[in-house]
Image (tube, rainbow, N blue to C red; front, side):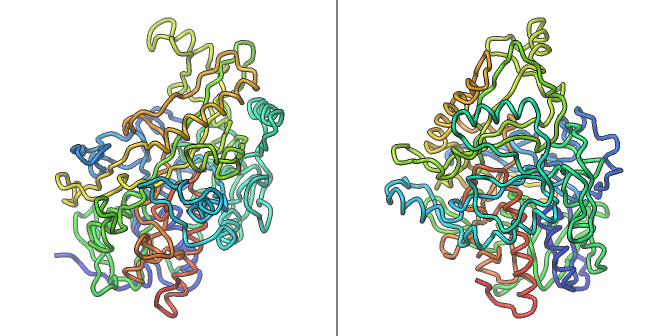
Length: 571
């Protein structure tokens, strides 16, 4: 029988960026908050003092979710049987205090104003026929201008280093720290882009250009450009992460209790209200009920959707009828681009930082005319220098054998003679790309696995082909001797790594028939349940989602504080 604990004001399920922000803001406002994290508490800089182990962290995923206990199942189409993802591949699910925010690269973009009014602005400019059948394009129920103050707050919490995007939305303030350094690689890209009348700018970075103390008094150090960011924790405390910002802030209030190894398996609810959550203490092996006035789902995209589905909270999405919202609008991201091989130039590409780079947004959003194109949106073009690590960085020209003497010779030769110009490209929601519960497979705790049905669409393929041509042109201007783009999109394959920018499943909006949460991330079906994170994105833009996730979390925290005083629907 489950043990029932005393009630708290707020309980969060997951302690990453979203859970940390909710905890800090609510605890500062005097609310008692319990944070439940299914992983362990390895989060301090000294915990990562031996972090430069590529095999352990980048190849064997030491900081990631154990998929032998919980995973997802996957299929491309509904007439296929989904099978479990038994090894991490296409995306990496974080686990432990700080979540994926511990091992992220630090790219901290703002989505474009176009993104938040995607349907309205597309129809206004191109007409209704521009949105093709079965694409579930919708507005977010909030505008860029309404979200801008929360972007600003997140950037100041993190100490983001950057300069304004010349093609982005208006800003109320500058970035709190100057942009990161420029390198030979990024300058080569910048000069080529300027010659092509494009608008390059330094990527906004969660790796800090200088030491910084944020408004909550948390201190972050300056980046040392060691090249061990993505998939690694930062032993210098120089990467903005929940474990060095919002979580310590929450703990200092005395109103926050963090519990690790607490795997939530159910949201308990009755008559349109949640009363708490049930979790398994995975150390003791016992079930525990944590009652709460407000339940906030702040875990990764997959788990937010799964918990709502297993708890029968909200209406599951049905692709046949187009009704329901939980599991709807699951989107991913595209990564077209071009590799350039340079015979006479060498670069110190083994050095770098996760978000050290230069970006061009001329092909992103609706910054270029789509009138004669068979797709909408676009992507941000990036040349970054995150650091080529020796196991994972073996770029060689096509036609090179994948093993043996010639491979070794060319791998060594091109290790410092290669530059990639690549896109983070938008992903549009499609009727038959969705999340639901698998009828055949369960996790280690007896809970059904989440099933992903997903494949690339005609929109994706057309956008991918167009952007490959643009990166080819830029690489030619950069002077590469051998130019090879990433090629055409085939069926989505969950095995090779692509990006951990999964979004959707609990989409936000202002219409309960097509959205699960309002613009405060509050559920329409249970007003004391908030679902915070990239799971609420109705589509994915041409950027890393973390900046927008952080902004929405700050807005949600404002809503939770307001709800705790007055109750009711906030929007």
